[in-house]
Image 1 (cartoon, helix red, strand yellow):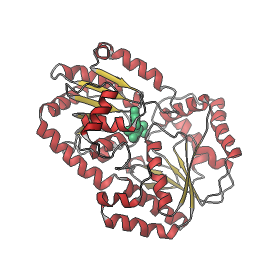
Image 2: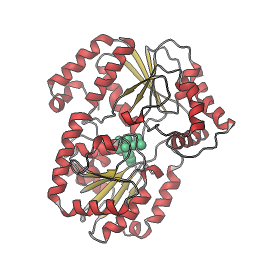
Image 3: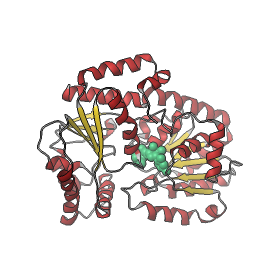
Length: 403
Ligand code: UDP
C-alpha cells in the first residue's frame, strides 16, 4: 500500500514533515540507486522497502536493485558476514574470486548512471571496482565492524578505500585506521508499514489463530532470523528456567533470508533442543514471512526477548518498543542505543541466562512494571527511531554529496 509523507503528520507533527520537504528542495530530480542482496528477510530489506518509496515521493528519483548471487556466493558472503563480526575464516583465493565475480557479473547487465550510489552491506561492496567513477559512492554498512577478522578486512579494504563515505549505525562502530569519511545514521522503522501499523484486536486474534498460536498462557516472543548470533538456542535454556516459575509459551518467529544458507541447519538444531516443548506446543517455531503476523505477535506478547550475541542495530527491538512492549535484550551492539536498562526495558550480558530468566519472570509477574517499561519504550521509539528521521538523515547526506 502506497504511503504518502502526509500520512505521517499525525505521528511526527507538521514541523517534521515541513522540514523534510525543505531539505529535499536542494536535490529535486537527482537520481539515487540503492543496491543490496535481498528483497526480503532481515533489517536491510525492511528499511529499504519503506525508505525508497518515500525518497521518490519527496522528489528524488530513487531506485533499488538487488545483486544476484549463486548459492556459493551467498555461502561465502555469510562466512564473510560472520568473520566481520569476529569469527575465524579460511580466506581462499576461490572465495575471493567467487565474491568479486558475482559483483563483476552485475556490472555487465546493470547500468549505473545515477547521481549517487548507495551500497548496502558487504555483499555488493566490490561493485565500485567495476564501474567508472562518475558519482559519489556510499557504503552503508549495517553490521558491527569494530572487530573484524584481520585478513578479510585487509582484502575488503581494497574496495572500501574507494568509497566517498561510509555510513555506520553507531559511534561504537567507527572504523579505525580507515581514512574514509564516516557518518553515523541510526536505522529506523516505518510506523505505518504492515509490520508496525495499529492492528484491531480482531485482526490480532485472527492471525494468532491462523498460525495456531494459543493465547491461554503468557507469551514470550523473539522475532529473528534463525542464526547463531541471534542465539535462539540460548533462549531455549532461558525458557526452561522461566518455566520452573511461570507457565508460559515461547514463540520463535524467524523466516529465513534469501542470502542465508545456514538458517535451515540452525533451525533444525534449535528445534531438537526444544524437543518436548515443541511437541507440547509450548515452544512454537514459525518460519513464514508475514508482516502482519509479526505485528500481531509483537502486540499480543507479554515480553519480547532479543537474546542476540551480536546485533548491528536490532530493528526487532525498535518494533517492539514502538508497540510499547517490555523488551529484555542483550547488552550488545545497537540494542544499547535503544534500551536504557531499567527505564524502557532490561539489558543483560548475552551469556547471563539466569539473569535473562529472572527478568522475564519479574516482568511476567508484575504487569505494572511491564506497562511502565513499555510506555517509556514507546516514547523513545517515536522520538528517535522512525523512518521520517531516517529520511531526514539521508537527505542531509545527499545534500552534502550531490546538492
Ligand atoms: N523479521 C520478519 N520475520 C521474521 C524475522 C525477522 O519480518 O520471521 C524482520 C523483523 O521484524 C525486522 C527484521 O526482519 O524488521 C530484522 O531486522 P534486525 O535489525 O532485527 O536484524 P537483522 O536480521 O537485520 O540482523
